[in-house]
Amino acid sequence: MKRIHEENVRKQAEAAKTQATMQAKSDKLDEQIKKNQLKIQKQQIREMRHAMKCPHCHSTNVKPLGVHRKDFSLGRELMWGYGSGSNGKATKKTDFVCMKCGKRFVK
Picture 1 (cartoon, rainbow, N blue to C red):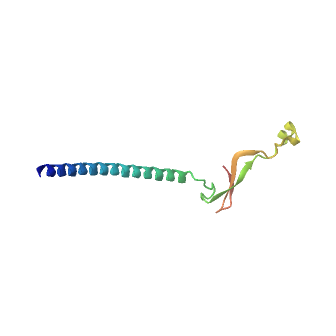
Picture 2 (cartoon, helix red, strand yellow):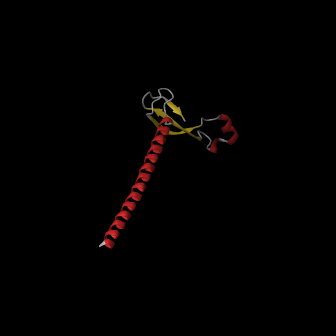
């Protein structure tokens, strides 16, 4: 009888230890989730600060119009010839228009 009682006590102690270990792991995971959520929130705030804004009215309601093109250059045309395709060459910039005030700008 004493042996059965000791075995039950040992099993209960092991179960309590296992439960404590699982609780500690769960707490660590919860803490890690909170840290990740905080990082995501900070990233979203950073992105909102650097969002495309109209330089005139500072509205973020901005739509892209398309790729910005360099203007026609008579010197470039004389240098490379008419058929070279250098008329209105595309740049790395994009034209945008503000939907609030209608101002067009390049970024």
